[in-house]
Length: 169
Length: 429
Image (cartoon, rainbow over all chains, first blue to last red; front, side, top):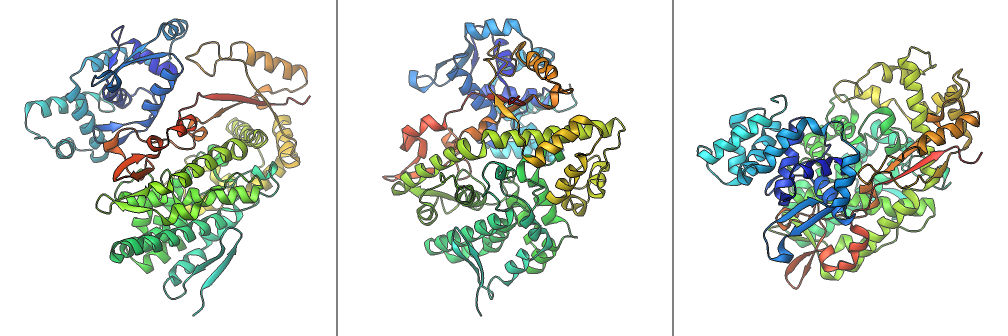
């Protein structure tokens, strides 16, 4: 994931920014699954698919003064919020990523999506990539997250995962 | 019965017990492992450091030796049966982890379009290889177990086993940093490796590995050794120039071949190129392993007489060590596009064309330094996700800390660096 791609994604979150590192990870995961060429490697972590590439790029752009990181434990808040700084906004006006605009609508939707649906849904999709069977992927993900499969929230996460599976867009 | 002994400049004696480890000696004698004697550990670093003639074979033996040492240490620290169950798989993995390397190690991978890890796994799993036969004869489960441990993404086995072979501080790195330092003569890879190996402790119900606080300075030394080696040896500008030259030459040959031009390919490379898909399962393992450094060098020698002027010139330059120089580009025109230098690159091309170089793109080569190699260590920040595989941790007064938390001064070298791009070009004219 390069600077331009992350800046484009954060621009979709508007002035209020994207809330939470976890949300950022899951949004990138879903977009990549949907075909967006972000080139991030994901592994399964406690909260679901996690990519070092995403975390590093975000930290690097914060350090370079392109992204504003607000909140988080130092300020007594649970979550960090990430928003573009004016310098990055101006730079983004000068250039456009070749692929990202195609995923604008999906990205905006994901940014607003319920966090638990993102977390469980991305875990289901991660297992689906291995299992190639939605039933098994759901059961494995629910077992991993220690939740029941046949409840409304799990089914909503499954529906989300199915929408973003490769080839479904 | 006497041990089978290899004399080694790092450890003096690397000894395999003939009674206990006869199978391991047999494994080292397999043609696929012996092939590693003909692969330079550091690719073309010997163009910069004439002493860097060591091979993947001596490195693999060194890693096996370190694995033996660490397993002996852990056996003393916990129930022996726990270690015994994994001992053979770990020793075999140490010896075979690089068995899939191609000519010139990592640097040639983009030329061939391969990943050596995938081929190491293929060599271990393919029933036709001698390596597979020896492993299977020793224990039917070994080929799959070893393949799982080589696969860095596979989490099938406990973290401590994976971490010994592939982590932020593993036996592979402990050997190559010191070996590369010794053979290049650069002298940066010094750290208290023996302390690191022999103070490692089991943690979390003996599934994970950590170090005591007293080893923190040895860990710091190791991290700095890795930092210095990358800055001074692995990313040396002269070496990078020859790597870029070799890759540009290969791209040119491929381009000509795809345009239907006869590039006078030798029989091994012709077979490789005709396969079109050099993936395990598509290309036979034997055909992949046949591609060796001497095959590639013979091919380059053929190209010195090629009718394509650029291909012939690059081939001659490579063989005669007539390299390219490094040029630093101006700052990018847009901070979001680190590889956009505006008119600078076209101007550079124009300059080269005026100097008589018909194909400036062959001589003006952007070289993106992979940021992950500019950082000697990076740790997982989420405590729940930390294991010995992704984070080096020390036990301080009964509390687990990452080495970055314990020694905050390390932040200066472990923070993510900005992407850096340099150009290699015919700058001496």
